[in-house]
Image 1 (tube, rainbow, N blue to C red):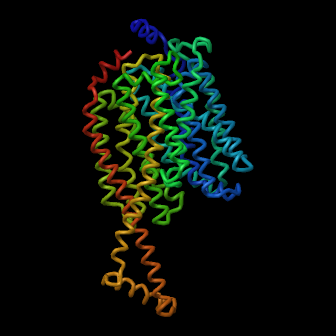
Image 2 (cartoon, rainbow, N blue to C red):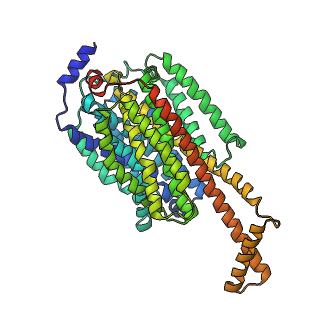
Image 3 (spheres, rainbow, N blue to C red):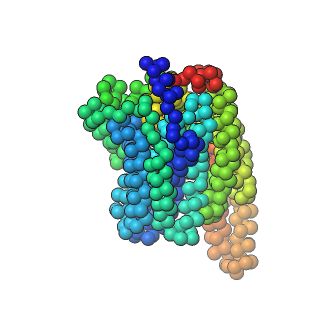
Length: 530
């Protein structure tokens, strides 16, 4: 059977240049990944324009992430019934049309409904692009092909805030959705004429592939509950809220049941049995942590610059853009190295470099940091991600039957996105808690018996008296207000350093665990993998 599959693969080649197809499918994935971060900076504008509160506007992000997360793990089953090319085209059409609906939304409920539809359509774009790349290139060139896909998955979240800020400031928040229309129409046309389904992807009828209603229900309920809990947990103070507690219980029960049910189900909606392959399981652990670390650090830097240093959204986005541009050069190099060097060594190097980068961040980040220093620091933080992402993506396919490539892509992307949600939620919670901790510690030094505090208060009061002509009492009050503001800023800055310390430790642990992965001989094994 294996030899027959190999012969069938060797006989089939795409009709057009694989790199042309790769650019087209990567463009569709880039459009979708960009949409996960581009809307963040426009939320205040949406809230004001649609007559909603700031808290209500955050559902614009949550609604998209929930429907996206539900579709991702079931893309393997959907493609087996619909066909990969047809499913890919349907997803592009849904995503493009719903983008138009988002742009013309007259009120928040309409926008949220359009975002749910957009998230469902977008859920199939990333895994389909990745599985198409896996099939149109021979195994020995797959790492280089995945470097192009990595551009969409790693660079797009960094470019999103910059583009979103620029469009919102210069035009309107509606244009962050309208820009999808020309890209969607172009990719729809090109995919229609360039992409073909290979012969080894057998389509099954609905009778042959009976819909697993129980599994689908458990998946939808569990993922929706988990995603909402992660997104809203910090706002509602986690387990202090009955709503969040209920969501977490529902998520744990449903997802635990889902894994057990799908393991024994003859026609599973999610092929959890893929996790019995060691490389696939290890790759998913890596991708979960890559999602958590890369996305949380992408959130940290602009948040630090905007909330503590007064940067605009566009200026903070420019800090991220430099790192994304460097990655455009780095990722093809890593793709070439992956075909010559064992994946575990590249991943170990990536995690080690990431740990060092996070340590440097704890030493260099402060409230007096210049724009250039912040941009260089972001480059240092982001460069290691490529050395982890590409080998982990490549390793996930090794030893897996070729007709399972769609399921592999769906699960890998789902796990990475889940890691992003966990990482962002964890970072937000840690920042809030550590900021409170540091504020308590710092205020211990703001007592009348502290000489440094008295000198600082006296200096700020005298400055207020001489510059504003205030009386002593008013000047003292202003001095106390300024000192309190300084304490808050310093406490917040220290909490960011704490998070980078945690990321540094994670990188160090993963550096050593990378060596536990099974070794491979890239050229030899790539040729015989299938």
